[in-house]
Length: 135
Image (spheres, rainbow, N blue to C red):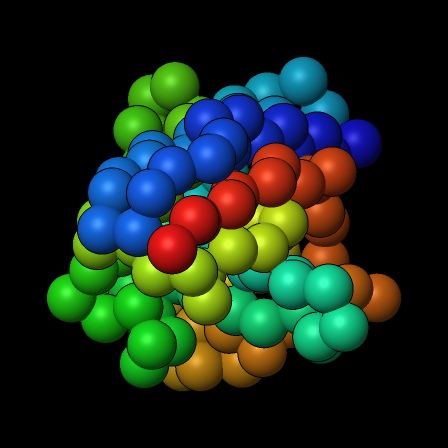
């Protein structure tokens, strides 16, 4: 059983920063006990499809969607099974529900190229956390 719990969402003015955290576990074990996994952040604004924001593989490789490059940074605390998304220079168009998602039997590229396009019917997902950026 995989559990993903997001936290850290909130409201911020344009240009501000937020840091999201995802706590992950699988069958009661931390992700660090698995050698092949990928996880990442996705977002969905009202009326829009869910889109990939940033993903990270167990080999440390990362991939970002173009609109957040240079502003967002994904990282993990492997030992604590925590995934972070540091969001800087936030824009109103970044407002959305942000979800954490995970796949196993995934290590890095080229799997990340597919994972950033992950659909809600596949993989494991958290419940989401709301991010609102006011102009």
